[in-house]
Amino acid sequence: MATIAGRNPDELERLLPHLMGAGRPELGLFGRTPSPSRRQPRRDDVVTFRLRVDLTGTKPPLWRRLEVASDLFLNEIHDVIQAAFGWTDSHLHEFASGKDYYDAGAEHYLCPFQVGEGTIGVPEEDVRLDEVLKKAGDKLFYLYDFGDDWMHVIKLEAVQPRDGAAPRAVCVDGRRSGPSEDCGGVGGYELISAALDPRRPDHAEAVADYARMYGEDTEPDDFQPTSFDLEDVNEMLAEFSEDGPGDPGLLGLPGPLGELTMAIRSTAHRKQFRQMIDEADLDASITVDPGIAEQMVSPYRWLLDRVGDDGIKLTGAGYLPPVEVEAAVAELGLGSSWIGKGNREIQTMPVLSLRESAQAMGLLRKYRGRLVLTRRGAVVRDDPVALWWHLAERMPPASKDACDTQAGLILLVTLAARSTKQPDATVAELLTAIGWVTNDDSPMTPSLAGRAAWDTWNVLRRLGGGVDEPDLRRRSDQPTPQGVVFARAAVRTWQSTT
Image 1 (cartoon, rainbow, N blue to C red):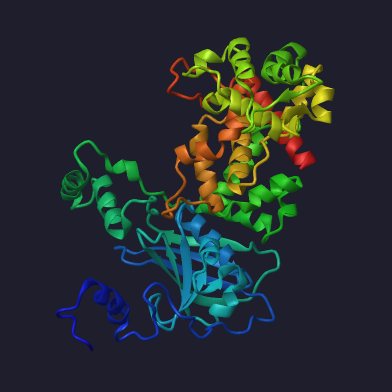
Image 2: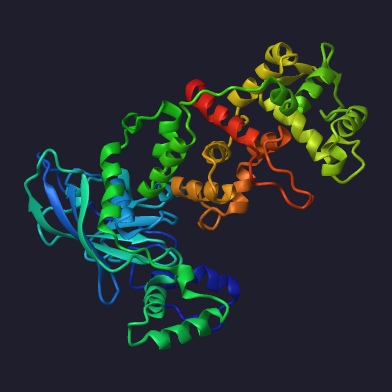
């Protein structure tokens, strides 16, 4: 090996990959080379696999015993493990087959995010369980959360004849509560478990260690482990069996709602979203009071009337001219909700967002340097109820960003269900369960979810669908009663018109 003494920084940078690869020629610095396939032919028949899944490093061992159909795919096994251990599918995961997970010859089976990023491996949804587990004693590895590194060892204990009426997956036994998300891996879990259990001989020491590590003002019950309840786990797994593998039609939901529900990868979160849909009571009739409709759509009616039959000549940059911006601020009372002169649209967000949302909702369009009514805009401008329904049917506003669209839809369902949770937190949780993450692969935060659902929130607030906040620095995150009705109408018409 070449010596590094006396090398300049550029030479060291070029030498680094060779040093990192020394002794491991099969690995690159930033990835892995494909390993020979370890998969075997699929079985001709479907049997029941009895599995024991252990979370490595836990003492006493934390484990679950499962009985599953041998023809499940690995993305479905991912759902089963998430439900069995109480995980929330908030992080990335990966399966591997080999001597151990990190063995150079191991074959890796990737989650959808990794496939999209070009990671070397096989998509998990292409691999069936009976390709990687064949006989009693065979093992498969499942790593969840690449930060806390929860390594699960899946061992095939027995191959049994299958009853055709048996559920696709069932949990038959287990030991210990499941760790909470982001608790610091096995070490953090064991420390928290001891600190929360006064019966343990190391309880006092664990409480002191926790306070020393995380501060006197923190409590270990902030990371309360998920109690192992066999009935609860199997209730979630029963829903997994009812849904069937990848068939939205089996959900009993209309196409678009079924598709969004099936995009949620976590069984627990899918159940949560279905419950919210039930609570939204979409089958109940919706009656719109003409007076309330007129009040809610008044900003859009004002803009449609202002544009009128002749349209409005836009500036060279494509914005409303100052006189129109000033009129909107004065006549719509927008001065109290924005700071500034209120004469340039690009610097007056309430006016800009009103005009842009009217375009996104199909009421206005730009034509040869003018802002003009669309045919639909001309029809509904004098009919408040028709305009109200038109806006509901076009929610969430059109976007090329799939995350923004899904965030808007989840927000509407959340509001329609009258959820008591903070809406942006619910949207963040479900977006993460779909697979959206931040640039550093962290779960979506409520603030990021609020940004993704910004256009939907903006229309709702413009319609008076959000509770007013006296502080300009805060945005309302709770709906008014009329906002709930509008959200129900939006979800109901979306499922029938999308």
